[in-house]
Amino acid sequence: MRSKVELSKSNSAKRSDVEILKVQDNVFQFQDNSGVMEESKDCIGSFFEGLCKYARNRKFEVRGGLRNIGIHNSTNVICSLCFDHDENYFAAAGVSKKIKIFEFEVLLNDTVDVHYPLIEMSSRAKAQLCQLE
Image (cartoon, rainbow, N blue to C red):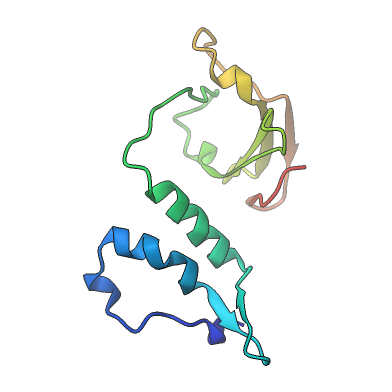
């Protein structure tokens, strides 16, 4: 499927960021045997779609922060974040080989010194999250 992805013929090094955002919908499309254009649903296409969504913004404002024990420890690097469908909770996973579930509203409370996870699950490998249900 990736071999059939139609990429633009122009030199991507000369494109501006705005041009890339304008054509992002066309980059990850492929043509099936009947000639019908379909969107690619692979992980790279999803990542690119999310990246383009956030690249449209010029400024971000910090609304809260996750203050965790051992924040200066390199094993606490978060590689993946995922919200539940109601956006009440989120899961953080990374090189610590643990998935930690936090309550989102707690992050907005600046009076808390340390944020503790509601649930913590161990894994044998670095965890990657795609969807939290």
